[in-house]
Image (tube, rainbow, N blue to C red; front, side, top):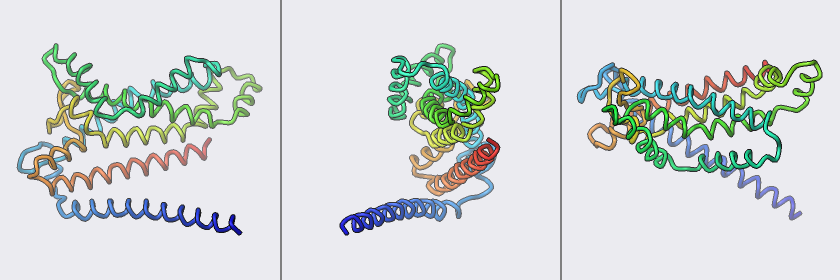
Length: 277
């Protein structure tokens, strides 16, 4: 009797927590759409930013550039490190344990600390060539920031692949390298892609680290040594000035739609890869 009541209470708590979470999420989305959609206009998507049009298009392009370059650097490093830890390193190795502890520690460091590190390590170094904040400094900082996330996600995805897949490949005469890249890696790709989605979400939503490293220049960067601002920094700058709150809400709508589109596209790709695997 007591067990039935406890199960009902736990079920009620679970459904209540899920309902509160879903309701909060829907409220935030509805609030952003209600405040931002009426202020969307074509001038916000002009190629050149001025104080009159307050265009977000340079920020959109800068966001895409910084995200792509950060993934190009971080994904290979994180993926190959995960392959080594799971497939090649000896189990119980102290070095492996140290790497995992370090990765978990780096995952919990606040982004403002990464921003200060990027300011001291990259921006100060580039100032020797007459450059300050730049896309390159922001990309290097974000690559270090998302590297632990990609590494841990890739490691867990590789661990989830059944050992029978490896044993079957070895039984057919395949070598270690062929087994990893032809059998294990395709099977783990949905989990790896999920880690990349989380990394993209963190890059797109990052503000503190990029203010110190990439800067706040609201123009399309001509090269990686030029300063630029992402959508989140653009929204922060508009709201911080207090003169463009309507445009800040419109930017939030675009940022929300961008993240939702990336998650939807990546989710469909992950499902397709999972079926093929």
